[in-house]
Image (tube, rainbow, N blue to C red):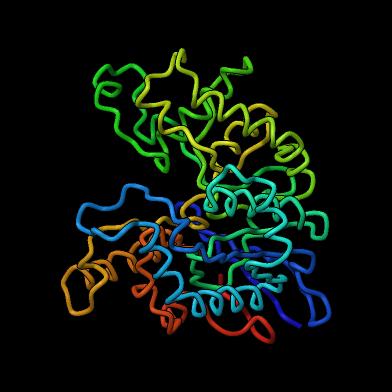
Length: 353
């Protein structure tokens, strides 16, 4: 028998909440699942997004190589988290199911198909599990605190979102449009792409910008989103909007329109009035690229990056780090952080969360 105790801080007061007793035959998250994906894209099919100015290697190639280098350690970290919170963990790779899905979208890049596939899997798995968590392979868990106990995934789509204003979109600035130079991976491009889709169908284009690197949902939520029922029509609309020479959207904005899952998610959740729960930093902490030297041991930049990340993790009680930077080395896979944050084992002790 295990007693889980959660310490929640509200201002200066400490609230002690008894969550639940359970034994080894019944887990608190028995009907929960989380999954990740790694599908290696051949070099000749990699796209070419804008990368950092101090790194001349193709950004997609660099990402591919770093994921390949750390894949096993990242999966080991995911398996550890799943075991500790009592959830089912599934890691998906290239197989017949993926190939069948891939062949449905012959006009899309493989990168775009993979990102549609992760949403398709979320939709599929919610038939089998009450709550489902998706994480990109580049997500690292720092401690065994179950997200399923903290977010309202049974009624809301739980994902990192931000407003256009917070993302830096300046709708009323002439200079913003004059110097607009964002590529298809940019949040700006995804915002305007979804904006055009909603305008096309007469909906108010006040949608959020999504980062689907971490998502939590239930069957009821996925049915409300209704992501795939008309996916071919949605992609055709995206193509038509991109190629519309008489569009009200400036050529430099329209040229960066794409077919990514986050644009479709923004469009679908706004169109279908889906309840959203924006994940706070605790559940989606973005670690962004700083410079190439931060990847190199024995440099001051590397040491600074480690110290900064450790400070951020402790300050925001971070459970999930999304390494957009792909600087996995500073995650310190020895799990040494855990000794600072948690005590014991889920099986036979008191857990401090």
